[in-house]
Image 1 (tube, one colour):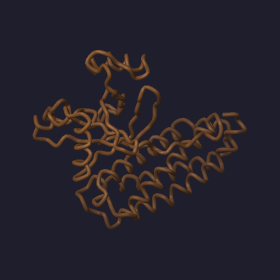
Image 2 (tube, rainbow, N blue to C red):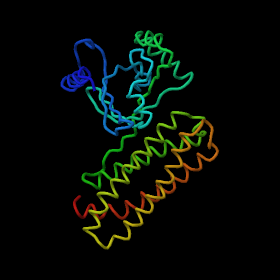
Image 3 (cartoon, rainbow, N blue to C red):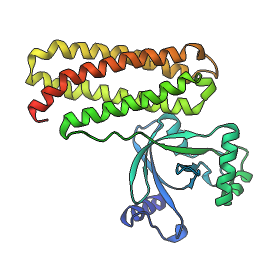
Image 4 (cartoon, rainbow, N blue to C red):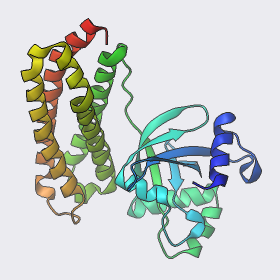
Amino acid sequence: MSSFNQAVIEEFRANAGRVGGPFEGSELILLTTTGARSGKPHTVPLGFVQDGSGELLVVGSAAGADRHPAWYHNLLARPLVEVETGTEEYEAVAVPAEGARRDELFARVVGEAPGYGEYQERTGRVIPVVALQRTHEVPAAEGGVAGKLLEVHGWLRAQLALVREQARSGGPGSLGLQLRQHCLAFCHTLEFHHRSEGAGLFPYLEQQHPHMGGFFRRLDGEHQVIAKLQEELVRALDGPPGDGDAGFSERVERLSRELEAHLDSEEAQLLPVLRALGA
């Protein structure tokens, strides 16, 4: 990260989103992506425009350079991002606009910030416009590990419902980046959640309750089945447009059935234990 960007980020966070210098009077956000190669968080200050419905739009202008900025490549690989406005922080799925929709949004952006039009004139690439779609928030019903488990499960169920609705309307070729980004965000979060359970939560609980060893082995087996279904979805999403569309919705439906049954069983067995431990 450049020292200039770091200084802007520190000033932004210290002054509730207000910065001086060349950005005096400008509205900025901080966008944190996950490095496509490094896997590390990467934060950048960006200007934004609202799309009319309150959704924020950011533009991968890179000041008219001939390559997309690093943060854009990051969000294609890992669509789940963190947004800081100065007054709130929230999680979003980053969805680049496509085709006519991209042109419509870019015209809106240029109408409010003409400099982006000048950047487009400098380069032969099509400058991306990215919508930051706030994820469904699931309030914690209780505290501790039990509450966190319910919160994550609620998030997964909400995201899966959205992906299922989009998949029923077509396939990855018909909905393009909208479906791809939401599906990847869901799959990456589910993968991380299951890895965390397998490496931390389950071994800890088995130490406290050795008689539950068989149950945890069964959950590990279910994780493996679900992981294979996730891999099938990701391969279909990253394949050629239209390739494998016919069975894509069926894959999503199967994953939905497997995951819902898994989450229900996990909650029924784990929540009483976690509550009894006061965790």
